Amino acid sequence: AKRRTLIFGFWDRVEEALNDKGMSKCELARRIGYDRKTIYRHESIPNSLAIAKICVQLNVSADWLLGITTQKRPLNKSVR
Image (cartoon, rainbow, N blue to C red):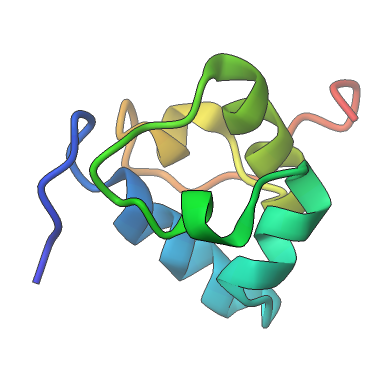
């Protein structure tokens, strides 16, 4: 079931990318400097810096993560 979020499907896409990477939410939280509890609060959307960090850690575009596009693409290498 899809979660209700401010940006529909954001956390569902994060979870999909986590599964692709074999990474846990706790590991992602640690890598982006979030508290473990914060990453589990699905009602909120992280700020732009946190979204950028999530994109880098999961190697996905912000367009896909935010639901702007349905095409899952890796980050542009010049961004990293």
